[in-house]
Length: 154
Image (cartoon, rainbow, N blue to C red; front, side, top):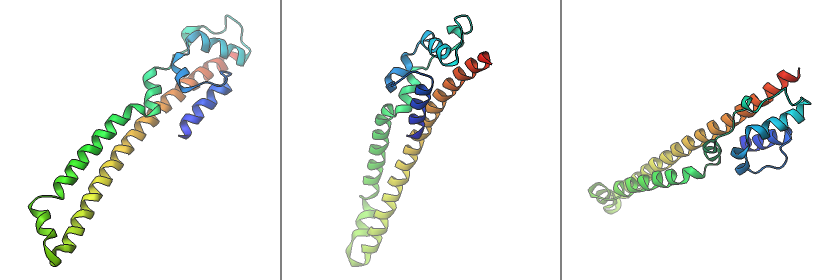
């Protein structure tokens, strides 16, 4: 994800070095203060730790997407159950019955696949939207840190 790479680049630009995603929520206000003082050439009294909002672990996890696997699995199972129900039963048996019905079964199968595909596409889009929201919130926090230090440094 380009946003995740951008976030890590922003940390490197501020002097945090090679961080791992798991390190993001561990940054204390004091660590942020120290790096920004160093980056912007500020004195000890120019910045205080209370000026810097830390990044919540929930945002980091939301950006990573691991927490969504259970949701996607349940969506998939729900859609598969619906797919199986739609491809069995009286209508499906009638559609499959003989030469005249062979076109009907293909049409039913195609419609069922469309429902599954659209359902999973919707679920994946929702997950991507949540990941993007989390990543943008992290970028907003980083930009806020930079803006505060830049404003003070003149």
